[in-house]
Length: 390
Image 1 (cartoon, helix red, strand yellow):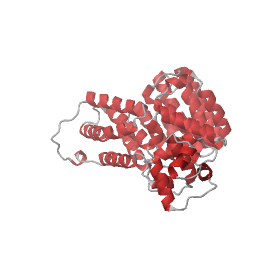
Image 2 (cartoon, one colour; image 1 turned 45 degrees about the vertical axis):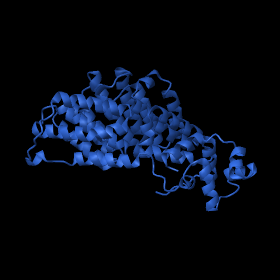
Image 3 (cartoon, rainbow, N blue to C red; image 1 turned 180 degrees about the horizontal axis):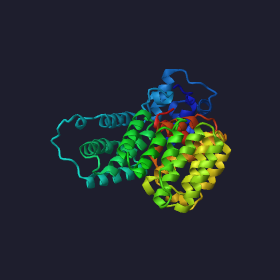
Image 4 (tube, helix red, strand yellow; image 1 turned 90 degrees about the vertical axis):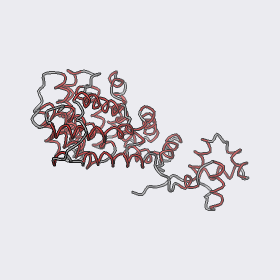
């Protein structure tokens, strides 16, 4: 997809400030006047001569391509693609399903459970590059174990596929995420709780599909309401159903589902992470923000966001959840025609969970969109250039 580039003068200004050069000292190094520099940075004077662009790049100690916004390899893209390719290979391996022998011993259920916990912790701390490294081995081992003995370590198998799907959703690898979520659903068959857990990730994967809503509601109906764990799972499925309804513009259904989830959340309370859902009153409030954004009501989303982050429960949410919400909040501020605050929350997300911004394609696109706004602060331009998205 093509994008409107940031004016070269704005790039020059940002890079000059980054080098701690005043307009006068920058002009002196170029052999130009301060007025000339000011006009270039304000876009009054164009830069057309290649030799001049090269001279400016040399003073700023960058490649001329950076000034022109061309041929800049986005940060981490190559590594991310290679990692996803390894996860794809792991998900696409079926040697034991066809009776092929293996010389390696099966990993113990304890090992799988421990590694799955570590994978979820890595995900919830938004350390996505590290998780990309861990998952190929984990997925391979749980698949081997499940084929050999479907009941041994079954919960770990489901959780391994769940965390894989969750990561792939973040990386915008929809088809591969669906495969992982489908594997989780298959492994969970016959166990209502595990099916509910797997369905949470299936809902994330299929959020764009209007047909996915009934699947979430069916899964929720199978989960009892008795314990906090059960209420967390049921509530999370209702949240997924609500977000799917928001995509279709059904605001009444969204409200009904989130109200039902909120009633369960009050009983669960904040500060818990049953079934890796982080479900509670604050999580439901953040879901209301996301739903409002999907419905195009930026002003309501902003108002709910600013209230939600003042709750005590905000601090208890996993880093990934908070940073992901800030991406939603940035979209809300843009809908409300407030690029300055959109930039602010994006920079906040980058400070608490850099991978949420730097490795999520949707977040990177949002950074570029905000940075192109004439009223956006220079700090977001700095981030956009660092990411190679401008």
